[in-house]
Length: 188
Image (tube, rainbow, N blue to C red):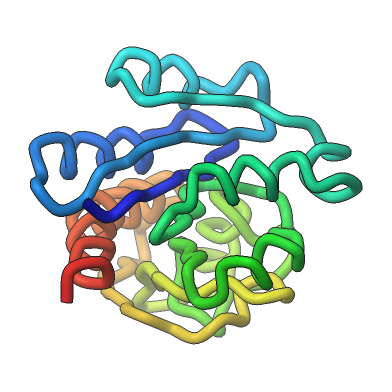
């Protein structure tokens, strides 16, 4: 059984989608959800879906080895960042090489980097009059949004689209493709 840990910072819709996708799988199990936000809705979603969930602070994540030690004990086959907003520490990346992935709400390398997440990305897409956008699932390295691309899916951006319209299109792509790409990574 392949073991997955999800890091999230907010509502956790991607985390819930992944947990539900693998709930009855004989091959993959989401074993833990971790968040840097003690008030994140992802904690409620994980609890409701009977998945272990913990929150941690910046010291535990970047200044000590507390989160790294949790990862060592959990020993995941894949660490998924699903709306996780902090830069991932090198000590975890070194311990789990090519086992940390992220979903980014744009077609990287466009609209990536520090501060480019969520509505910030969708506003930039609309302001730049892009005709298409999408999602990029990529490996995580020491720099924001610069790891090797695993998968991209595209959608059209209409001239009349608002950032909220773009967000809805991106959400649909994430819900459809993210679990399938994770499954392919773990099982193939």
